[in-house]
Amino acid sequence: MSTEISITIIDQNGLQQQLQAPTDMGLSLMEFLKGNDYDILATCGGMALCATCHVEVCSPTDNMTEPSADEWAMLDTLPNITNSSRLSCQLRLDQLPEGFTARILGDGLSV
Image (cartoon, rainbow, N blue to C red; front, side):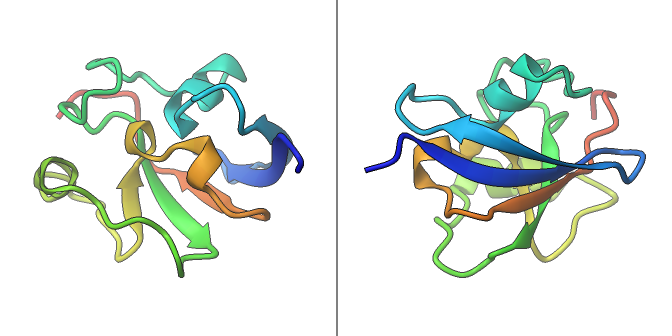
């Protein structure tokens, strides 16, 4: 079984990059993005309290875990929420499907 998945990230400027993400380290998508020098503020450190790690899941959107009540509460405060908005701190790399694509929507500002 592979310990990496291929994911595509679209940054705030629309630049798209395909990356290999480890699935055996217990990382969240937010931690992986920060580790790859993406502009993710993540003020709360991954506790779903600030929404500065907001992403839009572009594909695939089926078979994704549903956001928790805490995650929904934070997403609901955002002016640019979409039908597939998520907090990257709440998405675990080991639960993402191969070919996962996300667009970074967090602007690095606290809400």
